[in-house]
Image (cartoon, rainbow, N blue to C red; front, side, top):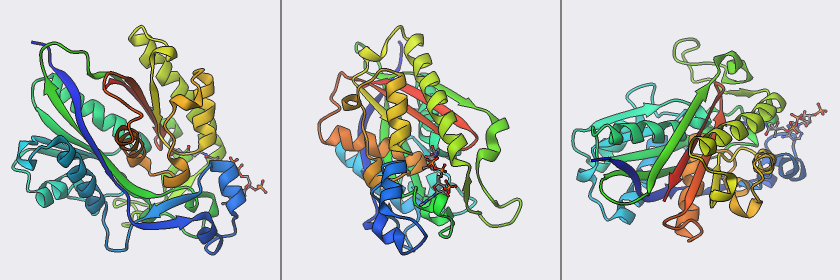
Length: 321
Ligand code: UT7
């Protein structure tokens, strides 16, 4: 019997501390006006010094488990998309497993930067459709503040911390809900447009984010529109069939330009960038959870996730809730 991967529940977590654009005016030579005009960001959350990516991930996972009314022991897979793991190894996924007391299962991290969550979702979907796993925690969690150069105004004003999670569950029988298709891409020739200037195998430090913003911007709009069109075409759909677009939240101008290319009105697009900034792999599940909880995204609706990030990587997933 055909197995579908259904989103059983969502959850998310934001650190308590809010850093506004006005706060950043005291850190680098910038202004609230520049940040809002160029990116749409008004504020972002910053994790506490002792708050690790795995702590953010655990809180988001707990919220998803609570909403599903599911015990941690029912989970048989944990996939965490992150660029900011607590340690080089072990994975954030095994820290989540330990804290939540999840018994022996499949657990690992995925590194595809801002596209990481869509990559993780697609991997989880394949495990489920292959009949290998039944209930997977798929998490995007980031402490981007830990890899920012707080003297570089071209990057430090753009990013934030947070985590989002969902539980993907195997279902059989009648029904159309579930992950419809995912489309994952990378082009390593563009790897020097967005990177960290260090790593365990080179400097022995994590390094800080370096970004050629204007070039990344152009690629972002084109690549995300392309991959979304592919997702629709593959399934014989058009943008009119999609109730919601949940894009990676890097910049309101990128989100608006992509929506325009797809001829999707902005009232069908979930936007959190003004309050969250760019939380890399956490941005889609954070935005998705918010819109599920406030009732905008409803069962039966068709939702598109799209992302683009360092690598460059880009990806889309079409989902029926
Ligand atoms: O999530 C992964 C994917 N990442 C992205 O999608 C980000 C893509 N890029 C962007 O979102 C935009 O390119 C940025 C928001 C990063 C920058 O916006 P922009 O309109 O491309 O600005 P720019 O880089 O062309 O810079 C314009 C000016 C420059 O000054 P000059 O050379 O024109 O005199 C910058 O030095 O703005 C200056 N600038 C700033 N001024 C005040 C750069 N950062 C700041 C700042 N405050 N924080």
